[in-house]
Length: 420
Ligand code: HAM
View 1 (spheres, rainbow, N blue to C red):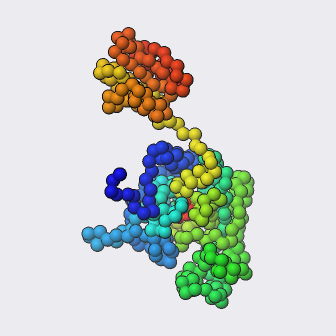
View 2 (spheres, rainbow, N blue to C red):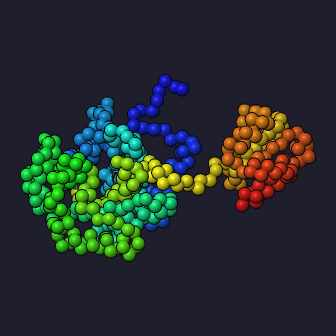
View 3 (cartoon, protein in one colour):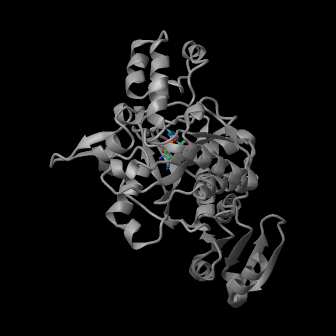
């Protein structure tokens, strides 16, 4: 072993587990590709202010969890803790909202960094697949995104995901609600940090998990009773469309989420098998974010699904993904001439679209056959000088053990046919 290990709160993705991870990542993105979302990729770091203004000065993400650095030129950068602010920044910078149709629909997949206390399902480096629909206010767009996430979970065979849904109101109704909530919270017996939070971000207090706080929150004013008529109608619109699509949801008044940019629709996908880090994804509408980062008014909605936690959820449910093996054919040469002939055959097989591998390192037959079996290949192609003299290779079905000679010149066609 090297004297180094992966930093705390991180882990390496290595075979064979990495195959399930990439399959999950692909499955989470697949519904988006089929719904008009274009791929976007942004840098791993951004100007610190993008996140402090976008995600919110009072959030844990900005105050405690950002990895920041100052470049030699004095620029303050942060490793991205989330994707929404970056994607919106990129769309504005490229003027996508002016040149194309609205909404601009984008999807992304990448790694994100938060200096959190590591625990099961909570890492300092984690992966998300995300989607943002920028520049339209339409309950159908919120519903579309939620339906696409539910579809991704369904396609993976997950059955234990619950969708929690809430509305956080808008610039018209939220301020009055915020004031009413603050007045209520100021009358409670709370510690100093929580009292400070009342003044900066009172909605977050509703999200406090401590029993001593939760007990006192009974009777707190709830956003649902303070929504203005247009927010109420909008939320009903989203709920109707979800019902119509057969996507079950649970109304959750206390769902406030950990990022400040949300307005109206907010949602989270939670999984019962994950302990305290139960959110496998979350998102919502962020109608004011564009203006917060210096852009025009562009009401938008999006989500991010956690790849690491989705893998854990599958494991918790005991769902084994049907993963194709990395190799279909494994070539085992016996002797120098056979090495050259089979290496050429492997190259031809790959060009013909067959996944093929080769026994490198001049190992003996026994070790090479062991490697063939371990590779997960369906067929081994074995050849020695005598086979080549007869113009054949031996094709062995590794499951049944059956072996038969096949003409070397026709081997690519024969193997392609057998593999279907
Ligand atoms: P988020 O709720 O902070 O939202 O993260 C989305 C998902 O990323 C979480 O539900 C979880 O599955 C995963 N995740 C977050 N932090 C960690 C961690 N430390 N370790 C492992 N997984 C984690 C956002 O990031 C928003 N940008 C979502 C969004 C997009 N809202 C609108 N558009």
